[in-house]
Length: 451
Figure 1 (cartoon, rainbow, N blue to C red):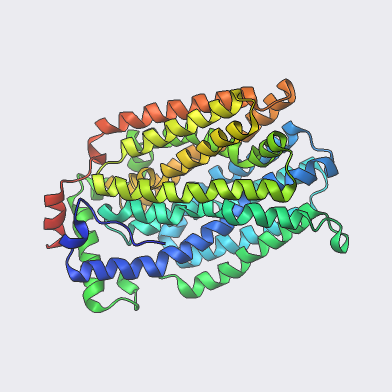
Figure 2 (cartoon, rainbow, N blue to C red):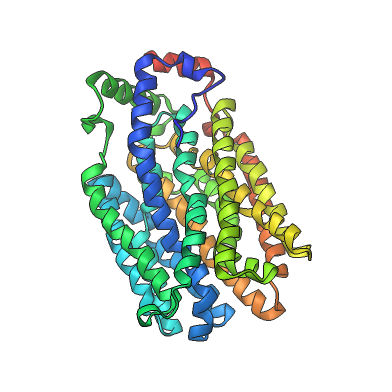
């Protein structure tokens, strides 16, 4: 885990000593812990893809049934995203994230009791409902702790949990599947049980460990606390109209919807990849369950490096839209390459470009909503972007399931998902014309730091 890069070519040198020390303390205190929480969240969200290697045949699920059950998670997630984030803003991240984790851990473990398709659908829906608000809540939470110039790197550091969960979860899930028959449980039942328990335990720890706001951080000195609170207040008041935008205005803001639609198209592809990649890799390589996990784990390791580099370069260059568009184009190319190539090694190589590209866009993208929103409007706006984007989580896996049943292969579906990723990249390029997303010049940034 790294301390977020400074803003501009020599930001670390320009930051006052107290600022650099404060940001280092904030990062070491918050990012590793939030990173761990998101690893557990992501494992419980997508481990159904590994479970499918055994569960589908054990329970007689068709590709369409599995695709819909995987995606219906996002129906519950989307319905409760905005209300959940507004509650978090009101009661604080500590209590609300704890509630989210304990409830989703219990439901994730209960997935071991699935026997029929309707039960599968209901539990996946409830899992999405329980987890609603976690990711946008953390993005909003980080906006309370990081100035704009360090935010993309901070978010990218937190979101490396997505590919790191693949590094850990791939081999772990493969190993858990190998427990098939132990104590009378199927391998996929062991997977759901073992990967659900950590969320409950961490949810209890959240109550003790997290601090809601800088003002109440007893682990910062008075000077560090004063600098951070003042710096964030200066940024909030300097944004054009930031404090005059209410919740309704945030929810109807065209830029918020523009951002949401970008990641709607991007998420259609990525969640299609997330839930189906184990099955696709197995069909391409004929590897064992553990072998599939190791291949996907290696892809995830490269994705982590790419995310960190793109997030740091975005902060260094004071630029966001291009740092979103170019990775999404890479993701689209990955889908097309995997769909048309017949040589397994080349097909897997292009498949790897999907998460590498998609995840590399996270840091720059998710730093943008809090660029022009703050307080409750920011909580609502970020949650709305996530809500719109995660409709893609329902659509992507469902599309692949239906098309795979129809065509007998993943190729046509992957070409469609690649097209969605390219549309997302083109829409991201349009953000360059949005005035509120332009990063302030370095000189004004430094003036604000010294104010």
